[in-house]
Length: 243
Image 1 (cartoon, rainbow, N blue to C red):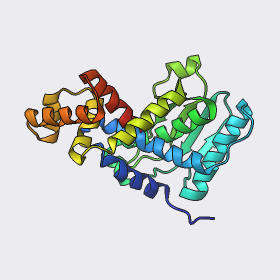
Image 2 (cartoon, helix red, strand yellow):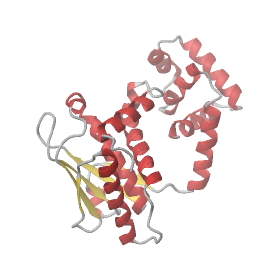
Image 3 (spheres, rainbow, N blue to C red):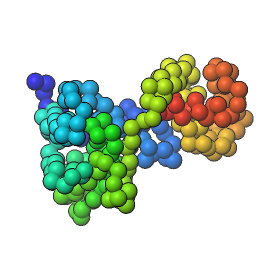
């Protein structure tokens, strides 16, 4: 068995990798969610899935994901499944310690991890964060709704849905990601800002460039990608940022 790696260390490594490509504060929350999603992909790539597709096998898969994280990352959270279509995850200690003192949004990493794993297992996941007192907090919990019900719709939280037309969308995203590698480092910095729908003036301010320089970069991106309109450029940015 591979050597145990602390969960917080795994998160911080993926945070560092992701943040390099996402520098603007307006997409910070999205960055945290992407880290959680990336962690979930790491889990699902390592843990065998049940061969049948039933509610009981989905629950078995989800609990197996938790056991894998305990064994590999030292994840010490406790999953309880007493309520139908709902899983409670108790967090006796905070894996982020000093980080969460400075930024309460850091909890979204785990919420996204748990939500994405629910989407993989059940086809649906909604995660409500219940943060407790303390600095760092102790005995927090997450509620994971595994089916769209009146309770899940009423709850505040992050929602993870199965993608419609998944194969085509994945193919489009993969193609955009490959095209993304053809851009220069500076051009790549513009992509997440475009995906946010920011106008040229705000992009220029965020990157400390002149508006004319931004316009020149965007023109070159459109030429390289064969895009003929601003809307097509934004669609490309959205697909490239989704990878």
